[in-house]
Length: 246
Figure (tube, rainbow, N blue to C red):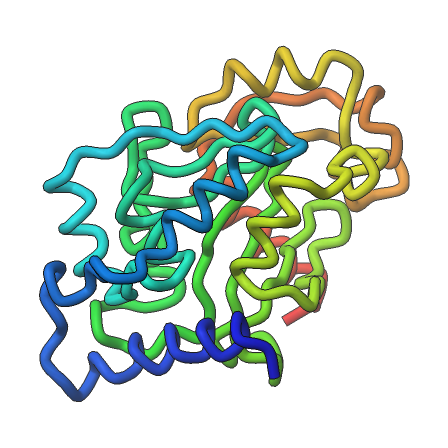
């Protein structure tokens, strides 16, 4: 069992414990001796893919950290406390932090009403990131499978929750250094980078024909429009139900 897996399991144990115990203050969650940001920042500096760190206000960072109840000793806590979010490949992937004018969503607020109703509840998953084509990355809290602490991809081209068999820290490595052209093969259209760079952090591209259909297999022949990420997420879930996936 790897150290990163144990750390992710601890994140969810901490989140679950808040249902019975008093939530820790932001000050208690700030690890001043061994913060993970030092390590994460090093990864960003050596990343092969373009990574933009969005700034965050101190008050907002503490408020968000308190809601998440994750120590800054973890990579997730570091992202939440030190950033307004991360934009990968000119915004193709957006990793949730404490929010920013360009990425106006926080990790806990985006999950509220989706993975939990009130702070302190036991989430079966956490939405940690999403991409410009309406795909969503989730951290498994037990609701997606037995692999607690592992990342799944809710894919727009098949509407399945695909297990990636990586932890949150490994997911950061995936975003920073993986061949994203290969991972998203067939889902990047001609001129995508310029189009995506103009998207807001709460917007995605919606395609027709749908990417999961035979007619939508060639993304360059699909029409696309900008819609809210909330609309796309709800739409994906509704389609799964209509198609009998649930």
